[in-house]
Length: 503
Ligand code: ZN
Image (cartoon, rainbow, N blue to C red; front, top):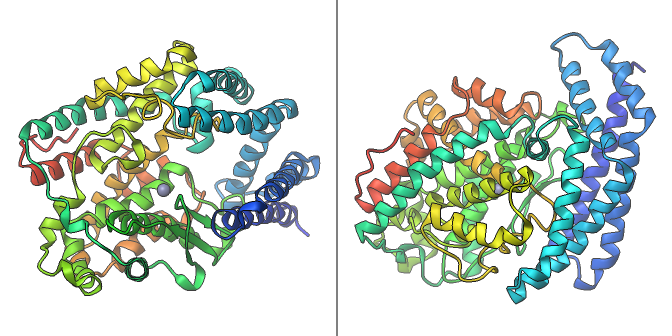
């Protein structure tokens, strides 16, 4: 056996352990009886421990270095070796005692956060949060001893992204979107959301959502749709990529846009070329790129008038009481712009300001310029500055998200990164595919899916997010296309004049 084969064989075991954990987690969120939680937690911890031991083992380290000697410059094997080294070194750098302390802090933090959020009392969480922040700063120092601590956290979720790249983008989003929200509010226009509201039979919702996912190209012979409280997409290996959904009986949006979102993630996963599976390159390149694929279908395609030109007859067939609704009315109902306090309920236009707020606050946490006790006030003030509204309680303010309780600092920016990337990719797809708008208006999504497959999906981690964006669009990541998309949509829906900012 060649050194390359040996290295890939060992890595395949690593990948299988990850897929095995994914099956257990998927089951935990879908079908596991409630009493099974404790036992499941133990099994998952065992999987994680074995995976960690194998990843840091000298056996794997030696196999990687032996393969490195066989690798030709710029070959796929060289990329495999580099990615394996990066993932292994990251794991090796964290001392065992710190990893254990982080895991314990996470479960204690989650319990404290749940209670504090329920009681809307920040003091019940402050001590655990302080502890979690301290441990994560230690983790950042272990990962990048001479580097920027926040960059080390960002790199965990989107390799290569840095504070220096993100800061001007978030500042630009704030400087364009905050005045846009104010202009929309001053317009006094109230959008009629009734086209998306009513009574929607759950079985019919499911049927319609599956029909749309299939039309997008999500392959149900290599996937399935199940119900969960918090929808997600998960992969168990080649040809098994599952998505989940939830619904609301009086509003079609959570189900339809949730399924389009997850099916967009699913297309990415189903599109990774088979030869990369079970290798270090057999996954999506980063969370921001992953999110761009879900948002592209959800927002760029799904909220457009073209999409509803095709969709409306199918919608009306499932829900005849909606007969007579025009695609333009539906577009307006799907593109409201209204500042709100809760991120997960935010519309597309204001969503990025929720993320900007978290980014600016995380920067200050890692720079050590804000004390934990002052976070609620900093949060409220940041919301007032960016969104023009102020939370009345910590439950709808600083305590609303689970991320910090889990120690997931640096995760939030990937959501907006997804929006930025998807707008830029969609512009490039429009330029590359003749009459894409007409195809969408006929429900012909194959040209778009194939363009994404060729430019993004198939490559797995062969290229970084930055490289893929530049290869696919001809320019580095920029905020112009997203700002143009959001401001021109607000102009159409609210009749305000914003000069459709190019950013
Ligand atoms: Zn997503």
